[in-house]
Image 1 (cartoon, one colour):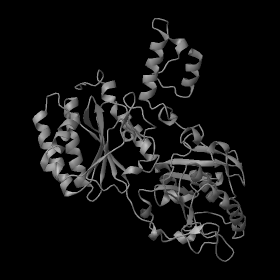
Image 2 (cartoon, rainbow, N blue to C red; image 1 turned 90 degrees about the horizontal axis):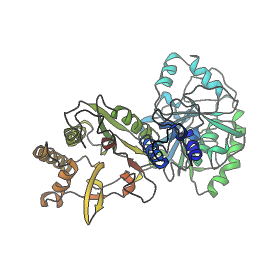
Image 3 (cartoon, rainbow, N blue to C red; image 1 turned 30 degrees about the vertical axis):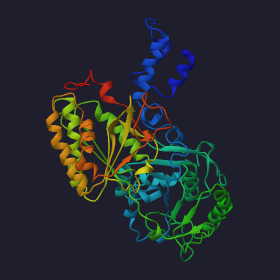
Image 4 (cartoon, rainbow, N blue to C red; image 1 turned 90 degrees about the vertical axis):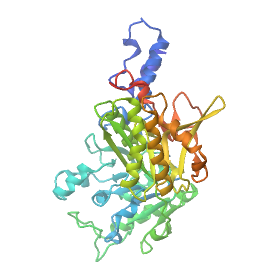
Length: 465
């Protein structure tokens, strides 16, 4: 058992975790194992990128196959059809941006197969502003390692399976297809995206030369290069269709004809709520909130997460939630909100909130015949009704300062009042959207809460359980 557990720890070591073989036998083996599992859970052991620093590991150790399952994805290429494109239309979408796409927007994944392109960035060939934008880019920088180039630790790498490979899992090695768009499509398929929309996949140039929506590249291979690219796409189009995945080329004038065509204007807009949260200054919550932000970046989920001053006690800090939500409603008018406790992690795309019509949504935990509102995951529609409710929540909280009553209990009792029952529509979230390890047991979580206040209650001055 100790050998087995040491092997498990190998990929998930933290400063707190020590190997079983290094612990004196003053305690039982089971006690040691329980202690380490608690430490691993605190550090989100399911995902190594939250435990390790840097990224010398390949991308498949950081993101899982199928993590975008059933979600639409946009792949942004370099074709000149995007010359005057409004890239803000891709806000709130899962995106894979190829090569210089990061200079126009913040794609979920920045992807390339070209080590030469990487050298152009870091050597300043594309300009110091592009180099700075690359350094500032927040998201996954992923390169298909076609030429066995020595990328630094902040670049995630994927193995290359040859030109025509098109596997179902990123571990097998993606095909390079003689262009980054082919590999990006393969990546989107592995991640489970469906449908997949192609932007800037023109596969044609002008006057015998390649043509892009930008003027950054220092060289041009000539328009003849597109024929080989098109051939590789043609060879996998039927394979993708057999998987039940729809690929739609959003340039009707593209020379790439093996996929369905469409127009961006015909795709319905269903924005997700803005995720909001706060953490208390000078506590471990700052690092915990970084973990939440990293998990949100996995899915290009927009957020406003702020640091606040310690308000003197754990309860006062939690009672500030209602005030913070009300402030965020005014700060982001017209944008629905999703509150997540700072110790949460988003493991899968929270699709249930896209286009949600209810005024408020939360999970209610059942215990001994009673239901208890859990406010760790709390959807708030930003309308006048909810502004009034949140204001009433703020006022009522003042009556329970320095008592044992929690803010979520106050909200629950408000919603049971006839005044609000008749006006506020409530959506009951499945438990996987407010999953607590050891308390809930059904299925894989979408949003998990680690209850950091319980774990750190002895370490946080002014806090109590």
